Image (cartoon, rainbow, N blue to C red):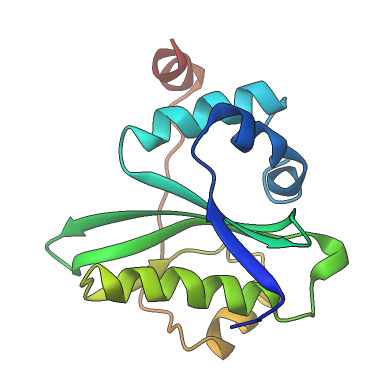
Length: 154
């Protein structure tokens, strides 16, 4: 792990909102720090955690993950979000942050470590292969329209 980095979970709305600019690099559809914080708080009700990697006290990378269980993997950590600020890419920050989440998975006794990445993201795919993650399937999605989003945010 990178010794210059410190890690902390962002649990309060203020802490979460302060990391908006970092998450925006991965999720530019998020309209504002307040909307981002509200979404994370809703997801926290379902076990989502947001781990920040900090350099000199400044958030430079985020990993959003959750512990879950299913019939395919048993108990596992699923990484929903992984982003490193553009200025800190190629500095092993992403690797170190993934290692930190992997350590959490091991401490929790998880059987697997799982994440998805888009088919349109070959650089991310190469990064994940280098991290020891293997492609095991395809992820299928069907948008259900604006009404599904509206109901969830109400």
